[in-house]
Image 1 (cartoon, rainbow, N blue to C red):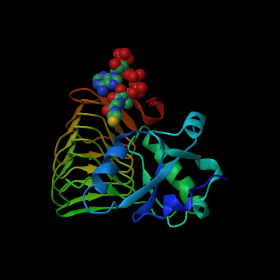
Image 2: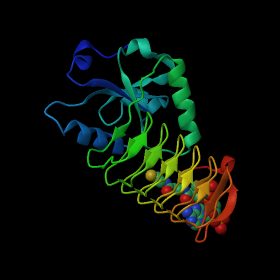
Image 3: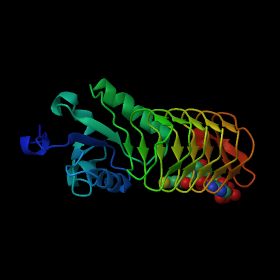
Image 4: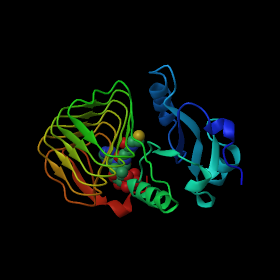
Length: 232
Ligand SMILES: CC(C)(COP(=O)(O)OP(=O)(O)OC[C@H]1O[C@@H](n2cnc3c(N)ncnc32)[C@H](O)[C@@H]1OP(=O)(O)O)[C@@H](O)C(=O)NCCC(=O)NCCS
């Protein structure tokens, strides 16, 4: 099998695979992280994906391995970063579970160097993109994605696999349970609880608690369906 050659994995950085050829935003994030110090933090080996066209042609100049035919022993001491595209987040749980079964155990959180991490705790496998503003006393679970320019205010709690879209705002003391998806530019009022795997449409305004597993849109946000119905 065509696995990384010695030159690729002998650089000074931590060898890294990107799980999923989703958004090129992750490449910019890695560039920002690698540009801070005198040596790059990561050596990006390539991606893992299942789409034949990506495996055949590569992705943004990176090699793509077929996720189904590799395991962790092919990539010694390699960290994995989740790509930032998050729809639907339930797919991400499958990808992560599958990679764990293949022996991958190190899922690094990538945080843009400009993001102030004061009084912030977060788990593994997260991606926090440029321009994200996170208030104090925020707790972010594993495998969350916070996209460009979003605001997560003070005392907010995010479960696992949450997605906060570009320029969305989550106001103070709000709780997003596991897998909550906040679309681009949505606003979540303070002290709200959003139930697990609920999807808030782009530009929506949420002023009341939401149950698990629903799709809401509009201002004020109204339920339009269940998350099983989400097509994109
Ligand atoms: C809410 C969402 C998930 C619904 O997706 P869907 O289940 O495929 O729904 P559809 O596109 O079939 O739309 C269903 C109806 O809701 C309306 N609708 C969809 N999204 C809406 C939104 N954000 N605000 C207001 N109305 C919306 C549609 O116009 C449609 O109305 P109609 O039946 O009167 O024509 C999706 O539209 C959305 O907002 N996704 C977030 C995108 C985003 O922010 N991505 C970030 C990428 S980095």
